[in-house]
Length: 160
Image 1: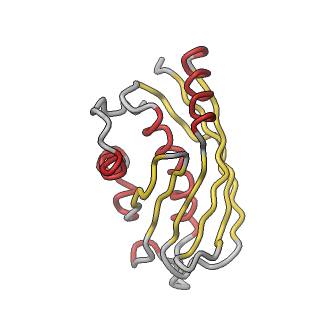
Image 2: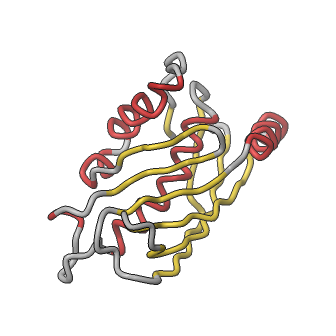
């Protein structure tokens, strides 16, 4: 179970910075990867992973496992944003990826989840004590070339 920090939400200009600190504290893997939260607002959830020594494979491109971890993390960013301050148990149920091109630079990972979807998720969680959601995720190199796409399914529930 992850107990999300009941910190008062930061002003929008600092929201991603606040999430970044919480994310790196609670999930050290993402600090190791250098995962940066770029957007967690207005239905746009976006992270960036740099191409660096600890993230590349033998071809000097971002390792597939790093890309998978970055894609999966987007759901965590969404949960930490939408349910901040709420004790919650969140798990990824499934992630499928389609690798299309080599990630020869840092990679931006992005998913959209609009305010209507957020409200439906909150309502289902409040009503049932659990809720499921899915994300379609795109991974792009710094030149905007799509390198992979993913579909992820998550489950959130109240702690038992």
